[in-house]
Image 1 (cartoon, rainbow, N blue to C red):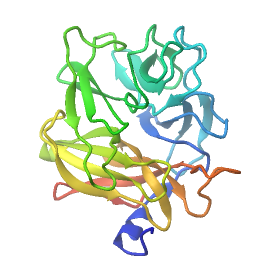
Image 2 (cartoon, rainbow, N blue to C red):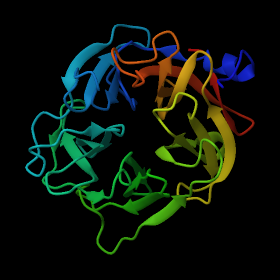
Image 3 (cartoon, rainbow, N blue to C red):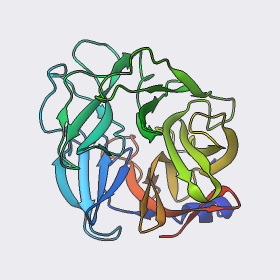
Length: 305
């Protein structure tokens, strides 16, 4: 049973829908006066790979820029899946975009990187980074920390992991090893952990991890839980649920955080109760939403836009 009109419901009403198209796993980048949104391939066929839109304000008109990846990879001529893009990160003069895909040579999914001098048109790297069984290697999150590049990932009822990257960005550093960051638990929304995203709050020198789970296709079972630590590598302590299903919004999750002029914004997808499914299906129509994010008494809270 979904939650009623209580505190959790009012909290969910703080989300503002950005537009009505199917746009799962939204990652937000602010660059040169534009807000860019990157999303997984749309189920309704509007986007063949990573979708990109941009606007000059949250409530403005979102221009459809088409697909972020401009050409087929040499190792993925037949790739059909393009999921969970990370926020493009600028390393030197180059933007790097990490995403999950299905290479020609493996049965499961893989994490790959594409790069560009522009923030929205990318060419795949000459090789994909890693592959794994099922959905165990999806939801990449890249982090620049103390002069090094790191990649976090995880889903499929397995732990969230990370590993140091080679300077090129499309392979791991020689002799580097995986680190386990978070384990799934028996809690309803933490039996599967995915969509890992780190946010650093300078004022209290704390790293906040936002993690989605457990089932993105179940309108009652997907939510975002927050954890905190003094290090991006943990150990993390659980803070609690940040958003969860309500009478207004179903299955909120897969968030990113972007800072514009000192204000932090929380961007996620969710299905609105008035029109929750893609036409002719029972598949949730996941639209991009935004709210302000503030840290109060060391706890993340959401505020209306």
